Image (cartoon, rainbow, N blue to C red; front, side, top):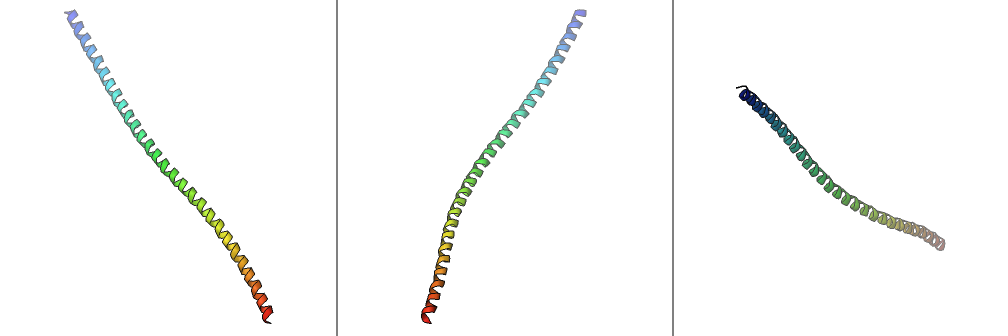
Amino acid sequence: MAAAECQSRFGQSVKGLLSDKVGSCSGDVMALTRQVLKGSRSQELLGQAARNMVLQEDAILHSEDSLRKMSIITTHLQYQQEAIQKNVEHSRNLQDQLKHLLK
């Protein structure tokens, strides 16, 4: 009878240990699942950040091109301004010459 009682206690002890181990494994599986989901979310965020970076890079390249074009336009406008100033000065000289001729 003592052997049967000892075997019963041993069986209950093993069942208890097994139950604890299953609970522990379940907790580990849930923790692993949470980590995988976080990793998946992190991967999504990294992908979105990469797409945003590409969009920003395109915008920067477009802005750089626009600035280059504006610089060229500014240079041409400066040339035109210089030409206009020379023509105004030349026009003044011609007016002075006409005044002297008409006197």
